[in-house]
Length: 346
Image 1 (cartoon, rainbow, N blue to C red):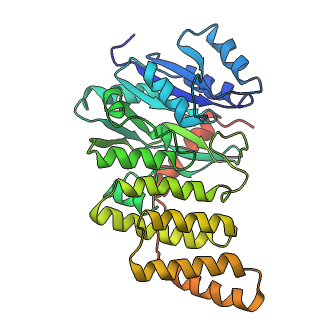
Image 2 (cartoon, rainbow, N blue to C red):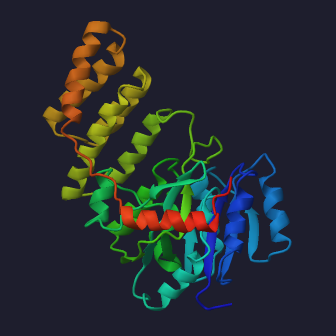
Image 3 (cartoon, rainbow, N blue to C red):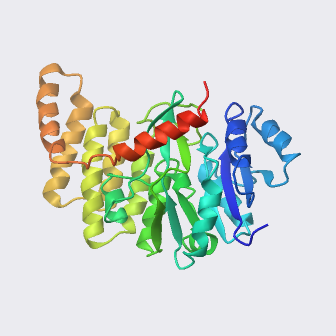
């Protein structure tokens, strides 16, 4: 094995129908210098059986089971991180696919980038056997600010990490069931970890079809929304100065949008959490509390609802997110190559 061997860490929960394809895409790598740690999160289907059957004939694949709490993908990722002994590692999801050149290209990049802590590689999204678009924006000027503005997030598989550096920032936050990647990258960039984009051409593809078996999935985007806001408060407390102001602004607009969908109990918890963590200046705090409370309480009162919605829409219009990154020429070339490979078979 090469001294530049890469460990791939995959959390697993009830993915019997998908994990085989994911692991086979890893086995099909042009480079053999990898090993894969799959950490099961308590699957109740045949996921573990599928992994074990592959592992019997390929010693590079190892299945272990989560042996501590809390339940969740981030705990599984950290367990894998704890037992990894290679200098470089990456995290992968149990429904994504690794393109054949992924590991080879990443190993080749390591030699010339030993001074970098996080090497970044583009990914693409797919659904219904079709490539949709690019997953990450390699052209952003300031990733920390763009993530805090909710404009972009870097995907789990795009990063190749130096093991010692991700350990320095304490790995994944196990309290987070949502917004896991952004929270990790916020800490990484706040800690001044050095990062560099290596390739704008995808080396992995990410499934975006809705799947109820996702570890981080919920029945609705707004179920347990108050818990998500409490997690965002954790991020907020670690920020300072302009970064705190940027994030505060993003949370303001995000919560106003959410007020259409949450209930009064959730609204009360959210308002209390934001107040406790000193979100917003006095005037904005009052405006936010009134708009959010009235929208939640009176959204079924016909005439009042219309007025409140107009006021909220007026506020939300002030928030202008950046357009998604695209490179149509490169995306077209990539689609042709994937089709010629017959990679996304029906």
